[in-house]
Amino acid sequence: MTPHFTFDNSYARLPTRFFTAQPPTPVAQPGLIRVNERLARDLGLDPAALASPEGVAILSGNAVPDGATPLAQVYAGHQFGGWSPQLGDGRALLIGEIQTPSGRYDLQLKGSGPTPYSRMGDGRAWLGPVMREYIVSEAMHALGIRTTRALAAVTTGEDVFRERRYPGAVLTRIARSHIRVGTFQYFAARGDTEALQLLTDHVIARHYPDAETRLDLLNAVIAAQADLIAGWMSVGFIHGVMNTDNMSVAGETIDYGPCAFMDTYHPDKVFSSIDRNGRYAYSAQPDIAIWNLAQFATCLLPLMGDDRDRAVQQATDACHRFPALFTDAWLARFCAKLGLAGEEEEDADLIHGLLDRMAHGRADFTNTFRRLDSDARDGFDDPAAFDTWATLWNARRARDPLDADESAALMARSNPAIIPRNHHVEAAIRAGLAGDLAPFHALSEALQTPFAEHADYADGPRADQEVTQTFCGT
Image (cartoon, rainbow, N blue to C red; front, side):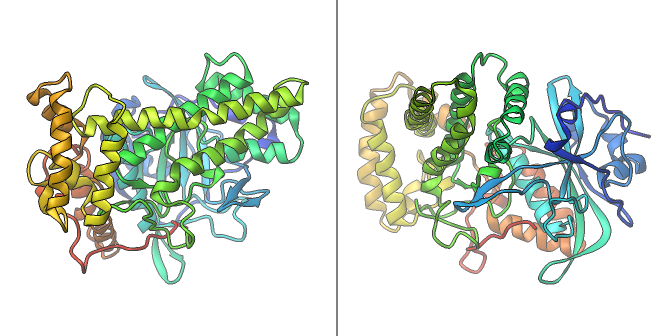
C-alpha cells in the first residue's frame, strides 16, 4: 500500500546554488514508531498507507516517492552571535512540497544521512531528539502556536554514535517551508543580489502574497515573529537556540533542539547546555527576535531601491515596530490568561506583578495560571504575596466586560492544564531507549488536549525528577 503524495516542488525550480540535489541514504531495517494520524488526514494522506511497509520505506529514506525531488538546502547564520558563512541541511532532506487540502507544505526527513553541509557529521539522528521533537512540536500545535509538525517517526535498525551508542531514528517533518533568515544571509553575504531577488519573490509568492514591496515582506515577517514569540512566552516555552538559521520566515517555530518548558518560573531561566551566558533565556527571546530580524532587514536592503539611506531608515523603522507589535500580542495572550477581555493601561503592571511574585515565590508557571481561581496561592513560598496581588486582580476583573463565568471560561481555554514537562519527556525517551514506547504514545496522546485535565501529567517534578539542562539533538 504505497502512500500517494501530490508534489509541486517550487524550491527545486530555483537555481542549483540554492541546494544540493541528492537522495536520502537508505537504512538497514526501518521500523515504525508512530504515524500522526490526525495530521495525515488533515493533509489528505492515508495513515494506513503511511504505516504500511511501503510507507515506512518512504519515511525512513529507503524509497523516494514519485514526484519527489530530494534536496539539501543551503543557508548561513549567526549562531550565538557568531557568524557561520555556510551551514545548510546537514542531516535533513527536503523530499518535496506536497499540495494538500490545507495548502502547500514541505515534506522533510530529519536524520536522512550525510549531505555536503554535514560538516564531518554522519547526517543521522538518534531516537531521543526525534521523540522530543515529535512530542514538543505536536504539543505546540495543540497549544495554538505556529510550528513545524511531526508527521511520523521511524527507527532505522542502525546505531548512531554520540557520547555513546544510541538507536537511530528519522523524523518526518511538515512545515510551511524551511526557508530561514539564514537562507537570506547566505546570499547576502556573497553579494548575490540575483539570488536574493529570486528568494524574496519565492517567499512572497509562497507565504505573503499580499506583500507588494520588499518593505511589505519585512513588515509581514516582523509581525509574524512578534505574534510567535508572544505565544512562546505565554506558555513558558524556551527555544534554546534562537540562531538566525533557526528563525523561519514563515513565522513557525522550527528546530526543537535544547528546547524546554519552564516548571518553576524565573525570567532568566536557561536550559540549553551550550547557552552558558543566557543569550537565549526566556526573558531574552523578544530582544533576540529583534536582533535576528535586523539581520533579515539588512539582507533585504539591496532590493529596497537605489537610495540606500532611505532603505536603511525604512528597514530600521520596521524593526523598531517589533516591540509594540510584540507587546500588543503579549498583552492579549496574558490578559486572556487572567480572564480579561478588555485592556486597561495598568494591565501590563498587573501581569508583571504576578510574574515577579511567581519568580520570588518559586511558583510553577503552568499551574499558577491554570489554578488562579482555585489553589494557586498554595504553590508560592509566601502565599500572602499572592493574596496581595489577587486583591488587585479581583478588583480589575470587576471592571472587565466579562462576567465571572465568562472570565473563568476564557481562562480555561487560555491556560493549559498540561505541557510537555521536561521530566515526562525525558522519561518517555528513557523508556523508548529501553524498547518501551508506551510512555511516548501516552504522553503524545495526552498533549493533544492540553486544556483538559490529565492528572498524570499536571504536577511539576519532584526534586529528584527535575531536568536542569537540555541538549541539542545532533
